[in-house]
Length: 113
Image 1 (tube, rainbow, N blue to C red):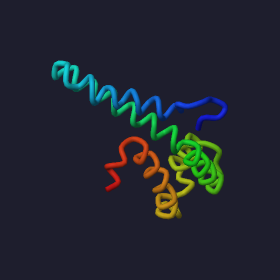
Image 2 (cartoon, helix red, strand yellow; image 1 turned 120 degrees about the horizontal axis):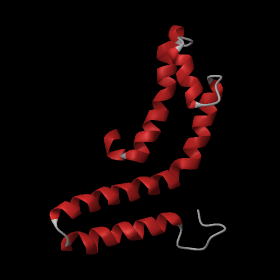
Image 3 (cartoon, rainbow, N blue to C red; image 1 turned 180 degrees about the vertical axis):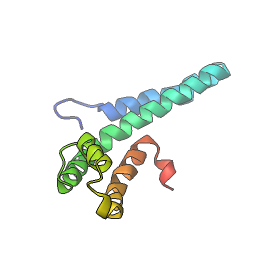
Image 4 (cartoon, rainbow, N blue to C red; image 1 turned 45 degrees about the vertical axis):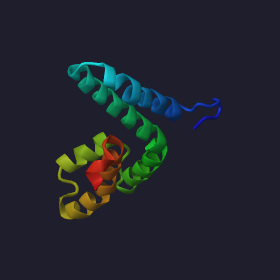
């Protein structure tokens, strides 16, 4: 997404910082800071994926919540705790699977393999 902004996009900027950290910074710092740098690089990757996929995931998640008759995750959680889905729990769990996969796709897509 660049409009109304020009290039580089937010994702391109995140990728540039990550690349600098990986190629230029990592080799010249002590192991403890290398670990922290890897953590920071993972954060940049997560933010980049969230920017890239977030709008589509929000749209599908909102549609799923509406199909279950709720407006929010909190409301869905409360209804589950109240036992309102006990008679069709497996169906609800299967419908929630894509939500969990979307979260993993952003957090660390390697876990889906």
